[in-house]
Length: 121
Image (cartoon, rainbow, N blue to C red; front, side):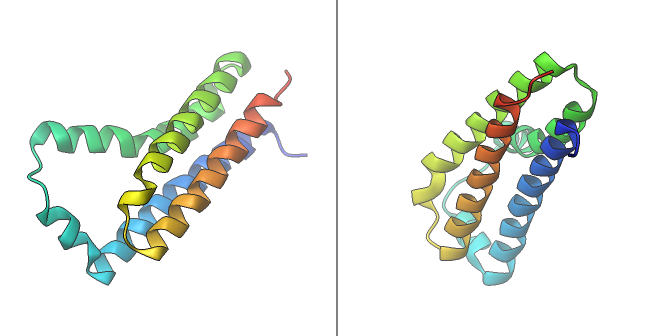
């Protein structure tokens, strides 16, 4: 059996790649400019987006270096946050591919919570 740290890192890699795939598909499908035209983005908003999107990357690293009790709770909290964040945002995406990718990412968030919750030192 793989070390739980590696499994958790893998779930965060999967989530990050799903988000990137969604962005790429949104650009190529032409959906991206439509979403950008509806709101004026400020520098603090872009910073907030950057902080949100770097979270899976940071979690990937933290999974490998944090001690078990802190690691466990960091994964549970971050994955639940992303699950709720995506669940709330799900209805705002008009494209079937976006909704599909968000649901898949939420499944990985659930897997992350399950592995972290059942992680016994």
